[in-house]
Length: 278
Length: 330
Ligand SMILES: Cc1ncc(C[n+]2csc(CCOP(=O)(O)OP(=O)(O)O)c2C)c(N)n1
Image 1 (cartoon, rainbow over the protein chains, first blue to last red):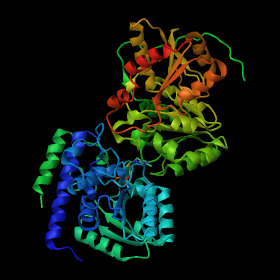
Image 2 (image 1 turned 135 degrees about the vertical axis):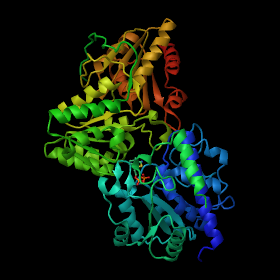
Image 3 (image 1 turned 90 degrees about the vertical axis):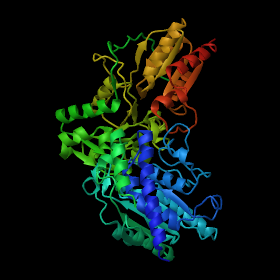
Image 4 (image 1 turned 90 degrees about the horizontal axis):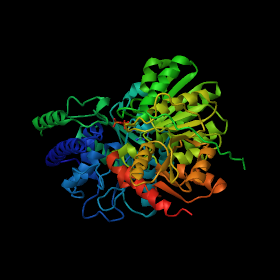
């Protein structure tokens, strides 16, 4: 079912809050990765609010949906969404990357707050998602397994091993969303190591694959609905995004992949976000 | 078993004046620039971390001899093996977690079995990578690399030694693993220092207990010896930069003279430096030992300056453990 206007407004409003939290967290930690999660905020919020069945009520239900963040460095946005879901205390967000916090620099599996898997080493995630999807199917559950990945992570060979097996076993309950921002650490992805057209690649591997504007929450929602309805194959949503989205000086800059803003940059970024509040 | 001579080693020349802090990865970048200038058979590979690993300088100076493989470490090591098989001397870099971890089997099959000149220079090793947390804190690489036949393993103590170790890697045929750090650490050795592959160095004389360390823990070991001296205990400090092949002579001499050896590393104690020293001591000169490092645990996110004391790897903790160990001496 299509999103109502009220739902669209709610997703946009929450994505805005996620962006603010990402900046607050990385600024407080004095390190971390702001660019990726700013770019992913719109599609991640659409996924978490409109599709993924994860809440305080079903946290420990074995058949609930699962999520695995393949590009684990972008976890600030993921943690902010877990806080939106009431699974992580808001105070805890400010302890991101500090000694003893469950909000580690890269996600660490934690059943109490809904982190379904440990990541951080790129390339490992999609195989794990395939395993989860196979287990759900074995158990006869209607669990959907969602996995986030990135253009950079798509350079790892294991992603394509997983893509092969996911199609071979026809795990229709698996959806991967790829954050395609054409940026990686060493610069512009097309120049560093071009992964080319991922929709064509996934299609050739036997997947249902689509391109979407990763900032268009209606289009992302539609792609997630379509993915749910494709039952015989896994689905890949190539979400085209702008790294650093919402903070002009971070947009399209590889330099903001993994650097914290200083105090002045933080104030400017927050002011710019506030001015654009939906 | 080879016979072990007991000769007396000279103290290594130490840096004097104000303590400078430089990361060993910086020295690696410097050495690569020198090697690129001196030799045209040197080729460098990286996996989307050239700014962090410091291969970027080489990539700018010698763009035709630099290949960014992207986020694909196994592919990087395989490609390095192919280049080396055609006669190139290849340096391949990423974070230690991915260089040693992701590409281990490629390293075994395509680099060590055919004995190729691939020099894996892995940065951001150990706990001192800090906030990135357990997924990035490589604490098992010494074990993984030292177990491989033909692989030589070097963990430089500071920037001076790192530069010389990288140069030695280029001059020596065959596979090599050089473990480098992200954090800026004190420069311990003076510019007169001469690195010899397979030789440890004596940094401080003492006969009450020996502390053998590598990498960032060498500075902590020297600090521990200072604390112990204040309590009337003379600790010998060894820098065992080459872990494979280990400097049997230096270790045996320390065992015989001091009667107890403490090892310190920002690495798992299973299979690491402590393990290499223990194997040597058990075979040639059994004495009580204690192994400091990560004891079968992963790390966590926090600043490096908090993690080192948290896991008992700071000078004060080392000094306390050295005193405990001395009570076990015969
Ligand atoms: C196996 C592995 N290799 C290298 C890294 C270091 N690393 C972290 S993020 C990254 C770039 C990934 O590209 P992408 O996800 O597209 O980055 P973004 O768009 O968020 O800037 C690299 C190389 C890693 N985490 N894992």
